[in-house]
Amino acid sequence: MTVMQAPAYRRGEYHGFEAAGSDFLYLVSAGAIFEIDEDVRAVLDRLDGSALTHAALLKGLIEDGRTAEDAEEIIVELRRARLIHLGHGDALAPAPEAPPADFPLQALVLNVTNQCNLACTYCYEFGADKIATPAGKPKYMALDTAKASVDLLIAEAVGRQAVHITFFGGETLMNFRLLRDVVDYANAATAAAGKAITYSLTTNATLLTPEIVTFLSDNRIGVTVSMDGPPDMQDRHRVFKNGKGSYAVIEPRLRTLIAHHRTRAITARVTLTEGNSDVIRIFRHLKDDLGFHEVGFAPVTTGETRAYSIDADGMDGVLAQFNQLAEEWLEYALRGEVHGFTNVSETISELIAGVNKSHPCGAGLGLMGVSPSGDLSPCHRFTDADTHVMGHVSSGIDREKQGAFLGKGHVGAKYECQSCWARPLCAGGCHHEAFVRYGDTGHANLHYCDWIRQWTDTCLRIYGVLAVRNPAFLERFAERKGLS
Amino acid sequence: MKHLRPINKKAKRIEEAVTQMEEAAAAPASDLEEDVVALQQQPRPHVPMGCSLSFSPGWEVDAGGGTAGLCQPVERDIYDCYVTCFWPVQVPDHVNYSPDWASNCATATKDWRNLDLVFP
Image 1: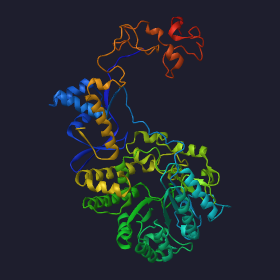
Image 2: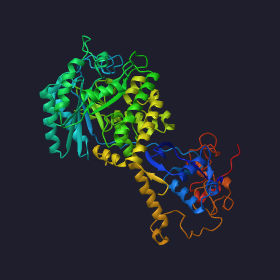
Image 3: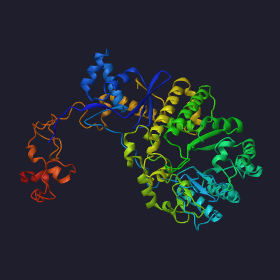
């Protein structure tokens, strides 16, 4: 039985914002950003909280003083761009399609050792919230395992022109011997397969020597240094096993690294903890005093009750300082200069492309972690955890476990995300954070929702200002990041 | 597009799609011959009053978009709901009470008259 009812226009899902005196909107169904004029504003205002038939909407726009032709044209344009839609109910944007089951691998994170010479109190691999079960497994990756990893990467990177290997630990440089051999092998193997390869490495910097720096620079291996800031902050949690702080050991080594590694940007990656969250002071020290090219921050991943975890008030303080640095980033960008606050740069990259993520990151999809024993896991954070093994480099990817992990992790499977405008970028947040906090990799990171929305809004405003006042910067930025 | 200025890559792709739609809409009717646009093109196809556009009992409309002109009573139009639809509408319950409701209706297009009313 058919009931005839005139369909009505409703607004699509979007997040509106103002920047540089203009109105913008971020369209959730696509991840698209538009600057809008007052006609668009008028239509969206009329549809605020109510649905209007075509005739009613048209009439309203004409009463505002527009010609019937203009009014019709505005409605048609917005309908075609799917900013408004005609229907009988709320049409939420459909969840992005799941990537194909044979999605090609792009990167492997080789945990070349699970051993570390530091004993950072908050470490997710060894600390109170660890999920790794390394007992009885190899502590150092053998060359055969590393070669099998490279072979797997090449075999599974179907159709890709370039692949990437990240060396990770434990402390990566405790197995530096392996690195040379792996790089030699991977260079030859990828060349034979007709693919390019790039490398990166994460280290605590305690074991850097001039020879190692030369090797890293010669092989264009990007370096990320895990560190927390100036001496008092670095030495609070990043300590040796005897409790001694590590700042004095790494400082001269960092200067050597930054002075002599000329082929790649050197990045610092800071873990923020309770009492160690003076973002601006940390940034100044790492950027200006030590000379890092980029500095990125992330709050420590912990259970809720750890003394060093940052509570909501702490995160508000972090956001305020992030916003201040973001302002500075914008001032630099308006002058056409690079600022170095990674958290803004990363988000701007995603906004340029207009990503609409099915999953928060590439873990278990284009990226996998390899433990010293050769077990595959969704990423380096799940390495050596028996509960998260996803195959082995010798036997290949366990498609069933991969499918289960990705099924849970899909943004469409996260109920709370469905009403959030930031989901094209966030997609629920880190799988590992979710597991540590909620015991489920598919759980949305609910403790960060407000924070993420506010931070995304900040980055959108920056994007809007640049789009109006220095669009050339965005173009150059896209080129540099390989986005164009 | 006149009112929306795309400022990222995804927005530009939307603009391209909208531009294509605008060009298609502005093109003379002869250019649309290859296009399948359901019943939107002019002149509209001739649909005799009283006939449905498709055979899907329960979901038919007449050429005017209503049900008044259909050639069979809507009460008999629930066959499709019974057979194929997941939506819980008021159709004979083929799981519990009326498992045989459609057993005399092997081919809906020919046997629809055999569908009887059910009074709960």
